[in-house]
Length: 210
Image (cartoon, rainbow, N blue to C red):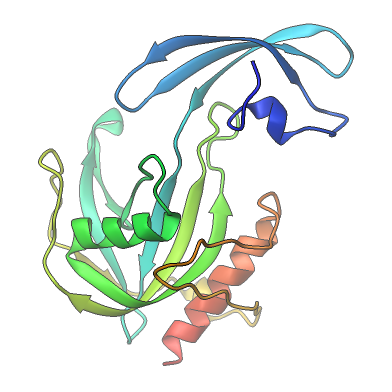
């Protein structure tokens, strides 16, 4: 079984590619889609790969004029405690990533932004999931009132100072701004850790210099 969301398509042409021979859905829930694939290894042998298929998510870094970030406190059941987090959420089917970022920022913090900057994408769980997280910087913030989901409980958003290592580095990178109607892309390769780091540092320096 091959398709646009199949791991074997994403590595096509790579000498380390593992090709899918057969796919089984082990569990399909409201969020989690657990799959088990039989794959062909580069040496011709076969193996089994179990992983979670994920629709992707966005995370927003909302920056105030003085450089502080808008963050929130939310209880996370799997770990049994609350965490200080940036606004984030799952991408709905067919939803543009910028539209998702705008929606999550408004829903969770009650804030809208006039200036959006796409920083890149990260893959946080590459050993067991195909999840990707698209990262945006949001500036020009104004409060409009939250619109949280019924099952979502958050403490009122708070402002926190940027970490010093973001504001004390001289690395710079070109910015890629986006409009409400654009599909956002980034030319950096996702496996390049310096790409996201440079964009985030550059955006942080720009925000704190205003």
